[in-house]
Amino acid sequence: MAFSDRVFSGIQPSGDLHLGNYLGAIKRFVPLQNTHDCIYCVVDMHAITVWQDPKKLHRSTLEVAAAYLAAGIDPKKSIIFNQSQVVEHTELAWVFNCVARMGWMSRMTQFKDKAGKNSEKVSLGLFAYPALMAADILLYKATHVPVGDDQKQHLELTRDIAAKFNNDFKIDFFPITEPLIAGSAARIMSLRDGSKKMSSSDPSDLSRISLTDDADRIAKKIKKAKSDPEPLPSEEAGLKDRPEADNLVGIFASLSGRSKQDILSEFGGQGFGVFKPALAELAVEKLAPMNKEMARYLDDPKQIEDILRDGAERASIIAKENMKQVRDIIGFVK
Ligand code: TRP
Image (cartoon, rainbow, N blue to C red; front, side):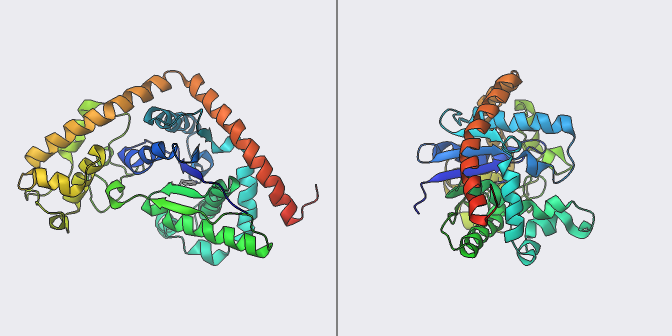
């Protein structure tokens, strides 16, 4: 069976959308629309693996959708929807709970990091989360998934699940999905600690640039970003062991679409007193239009809800057809 090229990706509506989500994910989703059938999901069922305030969950779901739209994802060309509107995600996730092995799931480093010493107290959903992610992808037989480095292991699990299902039932049904991993330039770290990923769960608001920050806040956060006393090197090798400098140069590179080396050729020998204002100016210039568009969409939540509903209907057609076949393959009576 041949699989036509289809992209699936998702972002959780759990807290502020930030620069890491934009540069590492959303921005990369846009050009894929020219080469693939794309499905971009707001994965609200993933978000509730940790408790979410219902009002905030609702608002964050609209915000992620607004960010997709503001970044240039075309809801006519691609499918934009929120996961909970297509119930087959949970149904396939259950099947995959029965395909995946405890040992595989126990090796997921994101679970170990998130649960930490608390592993007896976290939800069962948090443990099963990667099986739901595999269901998201395989429900549409997606062949390519753009994700950050941190999701690589979950993608490998998705491939293992697809292969085991195909093998268990002696059928070539699910594709073995390829990750489209962003280069290190798209890996955006905390502004307060260059060794930690920029994250909406970091207690410090200064650690991230939110997509809803205005120009003043963006400039303030970059000014306060942790750096070091040395001038910038002229060669990329000089960024080694300088995680904060590396991150700020990486953000500059990613926002401008230039290489880190190119940035260092321009700023090498200069201190952060010069580099930070230039970065702040660039960030404001690049993010302001996006910020404005997001605000325009969020002014009219009904319009976003209509787009999500329409997307969910189109997604459901594919999901229902594939799920029907999965039920037949398993042997469920219909
Ligand atoms: N687990 C992903 C994250 O936290 C979000 C996600 C859920 C996802 N389902 C997906 C990403 C399917 C890609 C494909 O970032």
